[in-house]
Length: 435
Ligand code: UGA
Image (cartoon, rainbow, N blue to C red):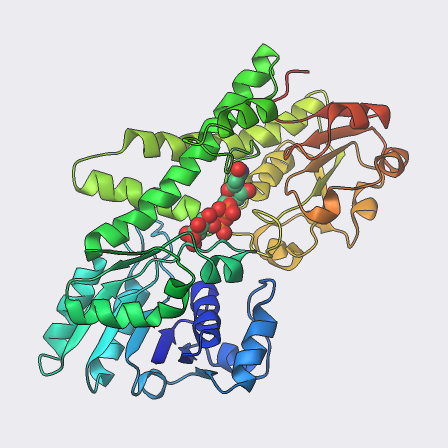
């Protein structure tokens, strides 16, 4: 099939490369010329394991190409995916659909025959209806369908998530679109990935409900962690004991500094807004957003408390800055609020991250960056682990002890244990441990 993907960002690039790998002929279109030129030269604008190789293979096989001109890119396409960004609107937290509608107008102007226009970006309920109305008003002369097909991939594991998904959700309102979308995903269907067809509004809401539920699960275990700390229980064992119940499941029960990233915070905010708009506010989701925001700053204060409550002019080493490992993404990373709290308390922050320091520089001032975790901890009064990168999981604690001025280890991801930290000479503070 001939497929156009508009927006060569995270979702667009991963989807485009994977769809090409299934054998479809895919054109990824982006209005950023430098990005298109870079992609043509084999440079990835994002950090995602395996994406560069997958892209190169499919470009070499003639199935994947990159276009700047939308009209050229969508010519003859049977399916046109809209995969542009839907950031939070600063004024009210709702998803900003400017790019989605801008692209919709351009698609309408260039439609030559029947195509299925698919919203792949995360969009509020009713957006696909609006896309349909807009295209119909601009082009009453052409036949087309609009489908909703939200993406559930995780950064750092995106290719695997796309190729071996738990499910694919497609919202359609007509049989023709259903058949086309079934053909797009036929290769996955053969792997028995459940392909769930719903109406468009259900499909759109499913995405928000899934992300808000996962964010709730994390926030729930984070509150249980607080209770563990006060009552002398161990949150990791509580999570294990809960997670073995198949109705609960073991995933997304890791207590930590709060969730971040480009999706959960934004989607939680947008779902809250939808509930309010329709006069059915979600108390649970509102609480999740509030508890998570407070938690990030509270984790900063926890580090200050670990230093005896006073960190003026003291050096705090922060290891791990990205919102999670295997990404260079700093969007809504808990480290930002944590470091801000440390800076407000007068602390001097030394930081290290395996991939995120370039983006960190753009969002955080007054931080000194180091190319190596051992350099970052030299002379420090406390070290805080904020992101559980693999390379931070097996640090030489004895060596770190020897380099620091005061041996305080605040492990916000529970990747070390009290025994080994104490054996290395540290004062150890973790999350959700009463010991
Ligand atoms: C998330 C969802 O997991 C994807 O299914 C979804 O497609 C994606 O958003 C999206 O909407 O595009 P992602 O933001 O890449 O994916 O990251 P996650 O792996 O879900 O992690 C999100 C945050 O939750 C991170 O800050 C992570 O550290 C935190 N987290 C996760 C915890 O604190 N504890 C956990 O047990 C799990």
